Amino acid sequence: MTDADLLDPAASAVVVADGLASRYRDGDTETRIAVLGLLDRRAADGPTPDVVRDTGIRLLRDALRTNDPRLVAAAMGGFAGRYLGDHDWRHGVVKLVFMGVPLDGVARLDERADAELARMAADLAEEREAAGRPVPEDLRRLLAPAPAPTDPARPEGR
Amino acid sequence: MRIFDPHIHMTSRTTDDYEAMYAAGVRAIVEPAFWLGQPRTGVSSFVDYFDALTGWERFRASQFGIRHHCAIALNPKEANDPRCREVLAELPRFLRRDSVVAIGETGYDSMTPEEDEVLETHLALAIEHRLPVIVHTPHRDKKHGTRRTLEVIAHSGIAPELVVLDHLNEVTIEMVRDRGCWMGFSIYPDTKMDPGRMVALLQRYGPERILVDSAADWGRSDPLLTLRTGEAMLDAGFTADDVDLVLWRNPVSFFAQSGRLDVTPLPGFELGGDARLFEGNSILRGVSAAEPTVATEGVR
Image (spheres, rainbow over the protein chains, first blue to last red):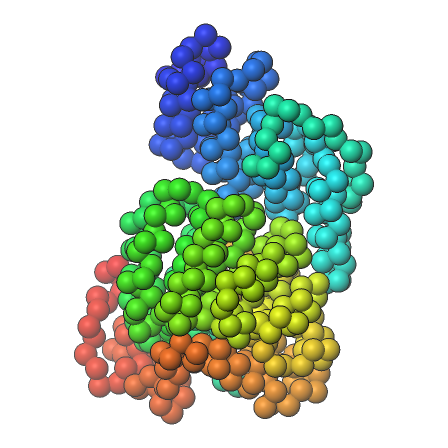
């Protein structure tokens, strides 16, 4: 399937989901990053069918488990901003801080940052200070965000 | 100084490391099963890895005068992948092997319900097989994760002295100490814990139930930071006996609870001196009067 096929809103959702999953599974890291980019483009183009959304979330979780900052950063784009559950999304943000990847690339960061993320950031800042290590600017940014409204399109947990 | 590194991933290290570790005084190690940086996608990858830990890696270490034991588990990260979780059914046959002295590393990565379930399964297996457990505490949300880990441990009914919580720091040490578990510290070049901070913790809390490890793996890490910690202890006024307690007798006591630990010198290394090349072979060195039994270098 071509990129155009995978992005076609009129294409069968099952076929698109399967195409994304197999391209990710069969691909190298660069290909996987490109698949995550296609997910972001689909999310930007309007509502995503359930089966594509579920497959996309599974691929995001796989990328978020890796230790490769390129994959983790690519997983925290527009698709994650729109569909990834709060728990996984918060862990993705904090993981980027750990990896030293700037948070500017995280989609919907200001909108989704909530009290629980601020709590995680505060605990991490406490550890860094107790260790006599610097607290990165991106971590400070997470400490006191505005409360975010809950989006019913996303699960509360995972 | 004799050193027992209770947490090191030698599969990711070179023979240069084994040589340097032996020269630094390392005579015994425990290698917990973990992930490889690249997520696995199926059970057979784990089975081969566990075979390598109990087979080839143990042999490789022995060629450098180092006793190698391992811990077996499904690591927390891959516990989230249903394709990997099936390996839990394969664990018991590995847990019966003589070289397996613990279950680990288990614990939390992202604190998901799947990780909860796998941690509980590992603790139940530990009780059934009467083995100690190495519990990894999470990098992200460590304080919250450590507290939740302690609750799951208490709920499981396992004796706290059979459990070490590793990768602790200034913020998490006290809650673990209060519960009676062992406290593990991974000394890293610039992150988890460093020798100076470790000495400060030992001065404040004493050396009882403390394990110091390098947790060296495929990331930026250093297998000799156990030695550096011992040196920093001596510089700070600790006695050689204190250092021996932390770097040798504590890990021996902890893993001896398995009933399987052997820390006697390997044949050919009884005098503790430098190992010698065996006819120039880079892998079968130090085994005097032995014929090479593995492929020479270049045949991997």
